[in-house]
Length: 231
Image 1 (cartoon, one colour):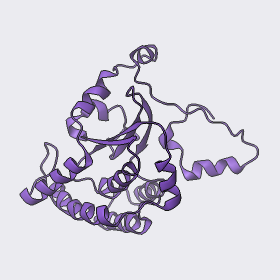
Image 2 (cartoon, one colour):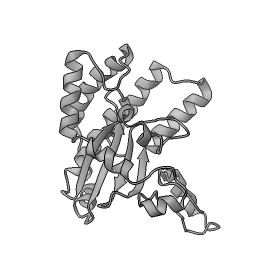
Image 3 (cartoon, one colour):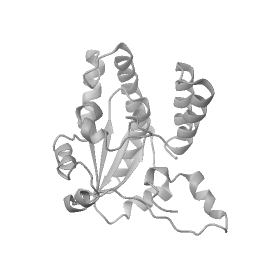
């Protein structure tokens, strides 16, 4: 199977390889940020876009401090200050606070990350009002705390539109998106915007009902709470 993007390789996808009629080989497309490679690929951007985004990236602690500040002031990140986004920013502040205290990485997975030898930056595209991010970012932070070679950086979607447009999901600006960078700031892989199980829940609901309702969003949050970052 050729030219498969990393974010499309789900647990369900891997299950297909139990079929002995399939050759157990994948050609995974990894997006380079080398200017020569990008030129040869006829991409309309250069490696400077990633570097510029990193210049304005903030740490997880700075991000958490900002959420606390916005929640207290009745604001959200981004230029569009709607009642809904302000509401979800305040709600997410409580989620972050709870998950920062309760999330634990399973021992077997924690051991893997502790022994990981290569330096990587995890650049996350997000906004404070994103409910999925409130469940996912605390898990990513806990992982990066296990190994000094793993560095978590955060940028805001609406402040980095050119970057966001490179990593759309089915044509949409779904967040969070996690970019895995090497020391040369090459994009080795991307992940987002939800775990595979949550993605299927959303896709199935949209297929049946057309749009996500507040009731479904609550159901999705309950799934996250039960999953506890395992997926």
